[in-house]
Length: 126
Image 1 (cartoon, helix red, strand yellow):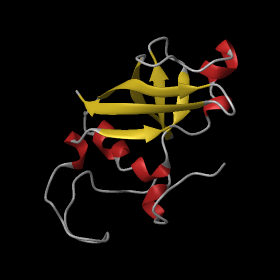
Image 2: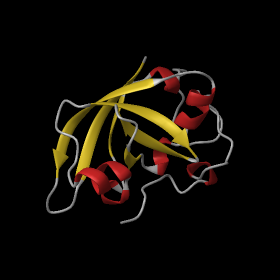
Image 3: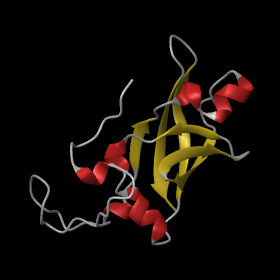
Image 4: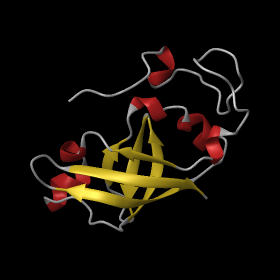
């Protein structure tokens, strides 16, 4: 499966992006809100290839706490430090947020081992 993104160069690691909505570039209007301080939900990618699934043979159960970490790509991490899955590239703007000191805590909202391992997480800035 491929990643989902906006089709912009900022979808990829190493591309510089702004952490807040500035009204320049992008489509649509500008709300002026700080994107770093907004909660979000996402379905993780590459769950079956990440060390959590490889080592346990399962996905984390609903209600499990996760954190967000930048490791060339954004990953959701379990409390034991194992990567659970990668965030879609459309969330790469969060890299600038993390680099500026914002941390994110998440809770597994949906998880399934079959037909393919999948995890959906609700994240909020802390």
